[in-house]
Length: 283
Image 1 (cartoon, rainbow, N blue to C red):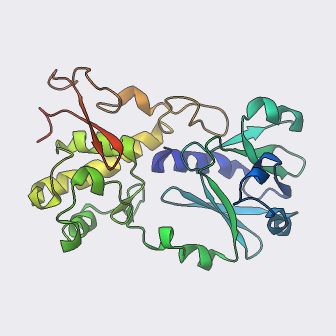
Image 2: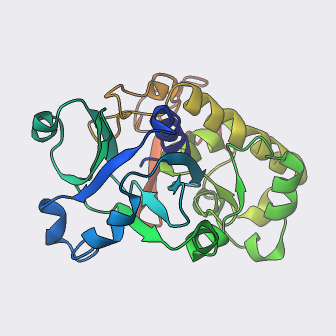
Image 3: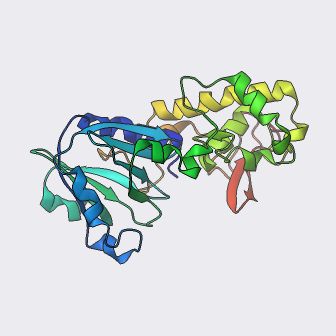
């Protein structure tokens, strides 16, 4: 958390600052408690008085592009979020763990607030260097992309290397499909009626097609609702909550009745992550 739909919703909201000029980027005093930020302030001086040209999403990463060659790679981690703040003095009131402050010339402040400190905000020499970064270079097809293809998904999941994998674990592997995390994995498997503990080799071609159709169906629905907000861990930069939780069928519904059959929703552990499902509907 956040997953592909949440990161894309954040990207779209931050695009309101496209073509605006950065006054400066400041790593906060709090950030300097952590090695990944220590002594890195000098790296961000190159972006002073530069325009934000674009924000591009790769899976759960955001790449900030400017009018110069260096770019910034940003990952929200488990709890990172961007907060739009009107006045500097309001930052401490609106943010609990601010790590980075982007001051927009004659405008607002964009604050990267990251309570658990799993997020990233780092400079790469160029966009070409970013796309060679292993977590991005090895990404599979994007479940939110306009170019997503069910046929391509079926071809990829049919590769020999995936056949002994458990589907509830494989769906969270971005080398197959990017943008899926624990929430939407559960909802996608429920929508396609596939049990999360099945091996890929047991999933027949018809089911693979159904699964391939469920992926963009669920992810795009979540994006249209601006993601899933359960608590303060995920909000849009404006402070707005995502509303996708209102239609979740299984996620965080343990022991509650299935909307389709009335049986109780089950919960299991897969790779130390919790998976929710209906053992009556999902086979």
